[in-house]
Amino acid sequence: MLETAIRNLREVITIDELKNVMEKKEKKAYIGFEPSGFVHLGWLMCAEKVKDLVNAGFKVSILLADWHAWINDKLNGDMDAIRTCGEYIKDSFKAMGVKDVNYIYASEMMDDMQYWSIFMKVAKQASLARVKRAMDIMGRQADEAEKDVSKFLYPLMQVTDIFYLDVDAALGGMDQRHAHMLARDIAEKLKFKKPVALHTHIISSLKSGGRMDSAKMSKSKPGSAIFIHDDYETIRKKLKKAYCPEGIAEGNPVMEIAHYVIFPRFGEMDVQTMEEKLHFSSYEELEDAFIGKKVHPLDLKMAVADYLNRILEPVKEYFNKNPQNLEKLREYIKI
Image 1: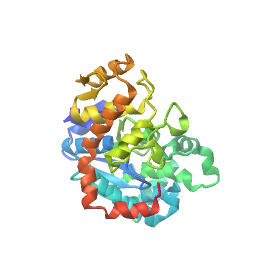
Image 2: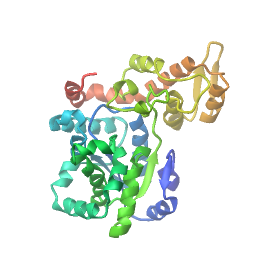
Image 3: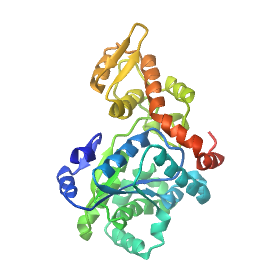
Image 4: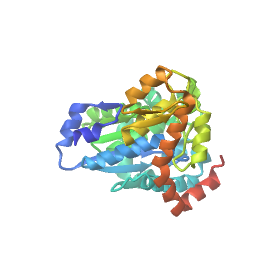
């Protein structure tokens, strides 16, 4: 069960604490998402980890952080749009095969005065400087909060979410590390349960090219991402334009998709070149061939498109049968 809980993670803080948690009869985990746009490939890794945690015996809550999205000015601060997006996110996880989880909106928790009691205790233990350092979890710079004080509340709310839900483990991408470490530090001060932090890899933007402004795939930057309900031709078109320098694997979003999405699912991969079909039994084999320029970027891109289409076929089938929330969200998001 431990191997199931930790596979394909980038980081576990700490493995010894997780071993202790795994011995518990009842254990809880959570992951939070801002309802703020269409779901992209990076969420596939999160969905697979949620399934892993469920299979490892965790009761998992998926937090739909509606008030967090509002504070973060997502979807123009339109709460109707944010709630529509929350329902669409539920659809997305169902489409990705996630079952037996609890969905909860942040606004539901905030109706409970106990939430605000915890929030104030958290706030009493956090310095302004520490909160500023944690603001990268919301994709903001600290100076942005100077014009909007609500931005300072966001990291404190995320820590409060963890304590209110009383979880043993907090799951998120590496971009959530500051918030999770803040929660762990405050837990010690308040004698609260210290959450184990489980961090997934982050897939780079398709347009990355080493630019910091587009470092990761983002639902708010359509050109940076492949969405889980994109059709085959759209996937191919996006990948053809993707940053994929010949012979360079590091920081290459197409290679990252192969590494973190395709190989964990299939355990192998074929790439058709002009001369022959190449078979790779591991990502390491593919990486060696790509660095050695035995695989051309365009051949890699088309192979990745084919595998992604296979992975996403059930997702598209789900949305074909259940289009209501997706279509309603498209009324708010024009891309």
